[in-house]
Image (tube, rainbow, N blue to C red; front, top):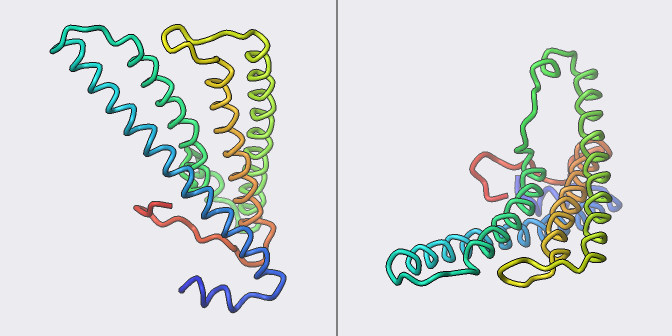
Length: 189
C-alpha cells in the first residue's frame, strides 16, 4: 500500500504521530546510511593508499592505520543503529515462536523493553567514559586527535541505537497501527 494512501486513512492524531515518527525515521536512516558508507569508503581508500605507499613507494604512512581504524569504529557503531531499525540483530525466537500469540507478544515486548533499557544504560556509561577521557586530555599517537572525540563515537552510536530502539518499541507495541513500515529483505532501510 502506498505510504500516502496509508497516511490518509489514519486518524488526525495518528497522522501527526506518523508524520513526526516517519520524518525522524527518514532523517536518521539517511544520516546513518551516508555516514557508514562514507566511513567505509574512506577506510578502504586509506588502506589502499597505505598499501601503495608501503610496498610500492617504500615510504611510511604513519596516519593511515590509525585513521582507518577510527573510521571503521565509526562505521560499526553507527551501523549498530541501522541494525536496530532493520531488526537485524541476532535473537533466538524458537521459544517465543512456540508460545500462544498473546504470550508471544508479551515476551517479545519484554525483550524489546530490556534491549531499550540496556541501550540507555550503555549510552549513559559511554557518556561518562567520554567525559572521563576529556578530563585526561589524552591524544591519539599518530594523528594527535583528542581521544575523547574518538570515544564520543561510541556514545553517539549507542545513543542512536537507544533512539532507534525507542522508536521501534513505540511503533511495534504502543500504537494501534504500526506507523513505520517493516524493512523488507534486501531493502536499503
